[in-house]
Length: 306
Image 1 (cartoon, rainbow, N blue to C red):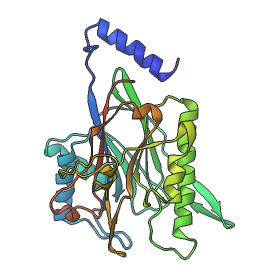
Image 2: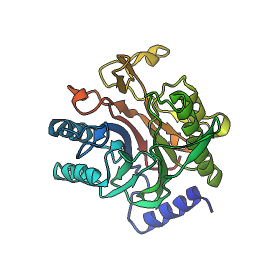
Image 3: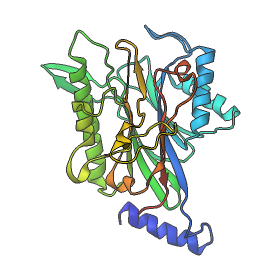
Image 4: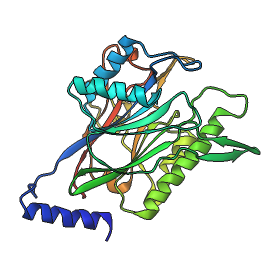
């Protein structure tokens, strides 16, 4: 019996025992946010996060109030716990979390959730061969199964791919592409286990949609992922085909003085059926850059298999 069939059985049972309203559909939201060096103390070339920047990070997360948030550039687990504790004091509680490290020991990625984590599959030692040399994925991948309610669960895979910073060992774009290939293999493995999986793939992919990185992650055919493409809620309401001109940038790249989209929420076809575009956005907050060089992106869903 697959997960959707199991969810159906649980739904019927819960309705019979009066635990839920069988006609109601709960909603929830998922976000991703690169915090730009949320460190308690300097590490290597990365500075500690200032108190003012931490406060702006909390303001951003409180404005979003996502039920699940993928975080990038956390210094370590104590830094994550400090942030979660501060958010709890502000009324936003994430009792469930997962922290995953990789080859880069200065920063980790994390997932914070209001919902229980049913399973954890951290990918901490992914590696690849490029031009005769072995490389490791810098930040690893976080893969978790979450239970939203007794009738609905999902799988979330979060990543922070290679930055655009040049390295002497290899081309940064080629390194990022190789990481994307490994991340896509993780997606394929999930969909092979369960073709109708409610799957969300999100994070800072450090590239634009036309890049080989994103084309690799999106895939093709029946297992292609759907790009939610969040945009600012600034009053823009272009009709098609001009709705593609909505403001969607998420990252300021100081070296080139550019603003582009490098943070994504991608969905399996099954997950896309529950997606609510009207609840999907890029947070536009005054003085956003005090928190990070990235802006959070959010997508909303109905917690009901459709």
